[in-house]
Length: 252
Image 1: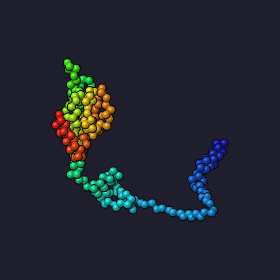
Image 2: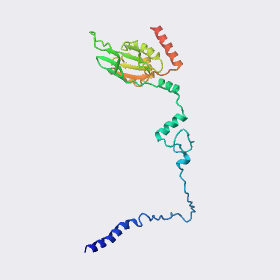
Image 3: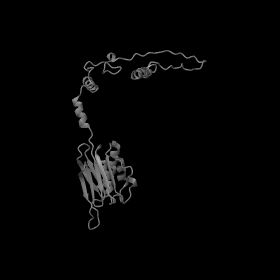
Image 4: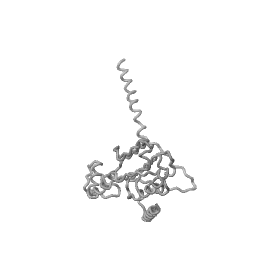
């Protein structure tokens, strides 16, 4: 009884293991020919492309480029790129130094305006401050328009002025100051709520030149701040503003 069971299981095992291996991996699916209109002539041509081997192009050389003898085929991709850059394009340390010197530095600017003070911060360091505690005559010392000019690379404060534009003629001094700034400077302009009382058109135009596109919409009891760069001015505009300022001084 035991011998019969062993002999019966052997053909079944051979049949079970051999069946999946026959036909499934060796037979290729038959693709039918493409259907086309019999009235239209179509020509078919088989094309077998021979792939390019690494030996013909070089393991590192891209298609269409010459082989670099200084780069070894056994280099990793990272070191191949480094070797190609250093061998084909040597580093110019003088040019690199000039580029680093001309690189624009980034500053984090912050302006804080309250009823008690006005503060300007550069990289979280206070560079300008004006106390706004009211006087016995109910006058705010930080009232008006404040202009702070900074160096674009070092970040040093080059000019800091306050214009009491709630007085009738102070807007002329503000316009003259903004027009005299050199191009490329970092300029911070802050207006305390009473700054627009006598803010004249010439001062408004100069503020628009440096980027204050909505200064005309500023209301009486609103605070306003602008951080921008002074633009390059044509010589004609500078001469016109200088003549206008000189004429206003003669009239005064």
